[in-house]
Length: 182
Picture 1 (cartoon, one colour):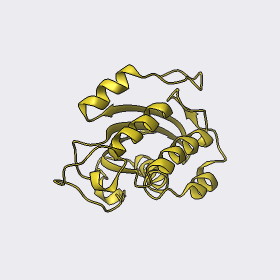
Picture 2 (cartoon, helix red, strand yellow):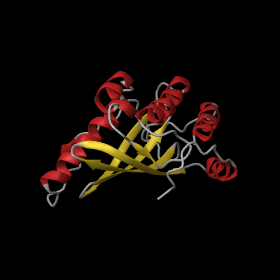
Picture 3 (spheres, one colour):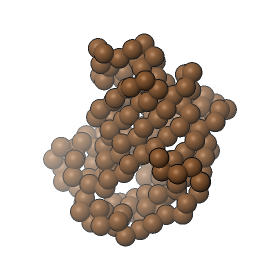
Picture 4 (cartoon, helix red, strand yellow):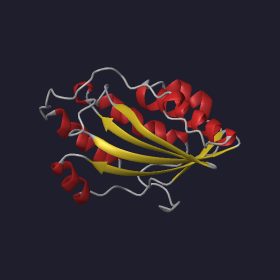
């Protein structure tokens, strides 16, 4: 996964974007934009925890905050290209941000069900690609939240552009944990 993101970052940096449908403002994830009437208080609270995590990590790139707030408890990672725990998340995202400082995570949908929170997102590496649904990646992330703490994570990543779809299919990654995909 990390190799794929790094190579996609390099390749995307050389792409010319269409000026249509772009926005350079950093996405903000706000609970009020996604909350559903049917959510229980637990589901709402779980969504708040994940929103806080995502906004600080993926959009604000406030890695110290993530380490302080989320780094002291177990976090099982099912993306096998990342090591377990918050250090694995930080390593992956810091690497992407180092190469693509405008990396952002635009949440399109949030689903909360019991202990699970799912985000459906559009990820871009350049500010000029924000809002352009022909650039970047579609990512569905699922987190399990227990007693107000994120304890487990799964993801599914789909490159948007045809070349990147083919590239993602061709490339593999190093398995860095033994947790299994499911």
